[in-house]
Amino acid sequence: MIAPAALLVGVLFLLPIGRLFGMSLDYPNWTTAFFAGLFSSSVYVKSLWATLRVSVFVVLGCLMFGYPIGYLLATCRAKLRPYLALTVLLPFWTSILVRNFAWMYLLQRHGTVNELLQSIGIIDQPLRLMFNEFGVVLGMTNALLPFMVLPIYVAIQSQDEAFLEAAGSLGAGPSVAFLKVTFPLSLPGIYAGTLLVFATALGFFVTPALLGGGKVLVAATYITYEIEILLNWPGAAAASIVLLGIILIVVAAYMRVVTIERLSGADDAMA
Amino acid sequence: MPWRERGALPILLVAVAILGMIFLMVPILVIFPLSIDTSPMLRFPPRGFTLRWYQEYLTSESWLDATFLSLRVATLASLIATMAGTLAAIGMHRTRVPGRRLISIVLIAPVLLPLVVVAIAIYNIYAVLGLIGTQFGIALAHSVLAIPFVLLNVNAALQAIPRSYDEAALSLGAGPLAAARIVTLPLIWRGVAAGAVFAFVISFDEVVIAMFLSSVSTTTLPKKMLDGIFFDLSPVLAAITKPVIGEIHRQDFFVEPVTVIPLIMQLADRDAAVTSLLRPMTPALRRTVPRLAVVPATELVNVASGSKTGA
Image 1 (cartoon, chains in turn brown, red):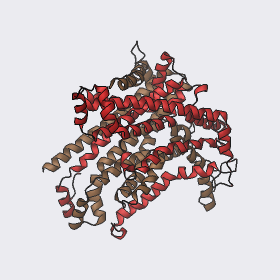
Image 2 (image 1 turned 45 degrees about the horizontal axis):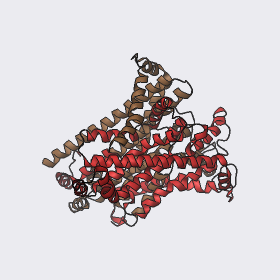
Image 3 (image 1 turned 135 degrees about the vertical axis):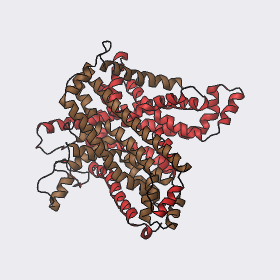
Image 4 (image 1 turned 180 degrees about the vertical axis):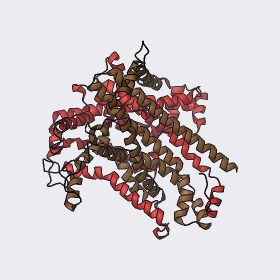
């Protein structure tokens, strides 16, 4: 019964990725010439750094807003929760394309944000809010924020309230109880959210293409640049394999962190 | 807990949370007023009310064609993914196939990888198979992306029913498929339906794979939206000083009613709304969260005594 799905994924996923791998290694000659060519291109190396930079900022942005939102959702009154959750679910179900369009309207040279800032008198000249890394980070943070909120929400929600009560009765104030109980126990949620957001951000295409306006080359847009401008399929294949490799490293690192967490947790419990 | 007793830090968190929620909602709050604004130059707030953009969309053959194509592709993709995914979920749940874990990782992997990479990889195979630019090809590629979501939704439903029902059917002489149809499916249809909706929306919204695999005659709705915006962007890139993005296709905003369908489904189930969203999340997530159940008791004592812990 697994056969149909396995066949689909095998033929349309594993096989193609395998072919891509072969192509990047110049099958059947097996050389690393394409990878060497890739890394000797300053455009590519710059795009890799831009990818990492953008992804790190997106993770930080998502943590900054995502943790408080997850916390609020988990600790608010149960009656209020569905309404507050709507502010996360509605964007989650809305097409990223459409959300990016909306940001483009807001952030353009004579857009709402610039007009607002000018009318208040904070700035004289319109700011460049998009077609640069700022716009890309802002759009991607907006797009990926729900993926940070949900695991953090679950991590805080599933904590036993008795822990907080115990902390309180033992003399900890609400802030101290948060720092010593709620926050440490929500770390798995933070790890999971960070993995989801970081891994997705590394390979994100739509937002860098739209809010970057061709000015921000990241790993994913670089791959289409190789294909559409340079007509270099093997180069694109090699760039794809590098991107896959980076994402796999990130996932593997996450697995390690989680395993170590689990082991140390087990040690604590025994002590 | 009353607000006064919350303490400084939790109140700060709530304040930032409200800012974050506004940040999340901004693009959605902007879309609707824009779609009924009279001004040909997009400005916010809107200057006047009109249904012109809606009318233009509904009378434009190319927009309607793209919409119907997307509906067909998404329906087909959802059908394929739901059938293959449900069968696989039941199969994996029922049997102890060696390498079950590996199979499930492989089936779920397409979600974790960048769409651009998946797209060019599939493009290469389709060039051989002659599937580029066909509806069926796009739907098939989308179904691969959607299978993980069907799998996770159906799997969650399967966990909730006792295995013995299925075993009873099998021992009473039903074949594996008959047992699934008569006994298992009626019990898990909600999970299957949720998976099907997920699959539909994933395909309906997907643009990167469509960008690579579609031809002029098979332009899906998101692809058409993206084409429109790229077309409008190109002169801008030549002359940056020009006011950016004047008249983009406001018809773009029509996708919204469709993407809202699953949301309504979720809200019908109000309390489950938040948690059911987690089902399609990565299995890694589901594994890490239960760990919370084991909390070292020493931690609490440390809180009281004010000493730091390594957690």
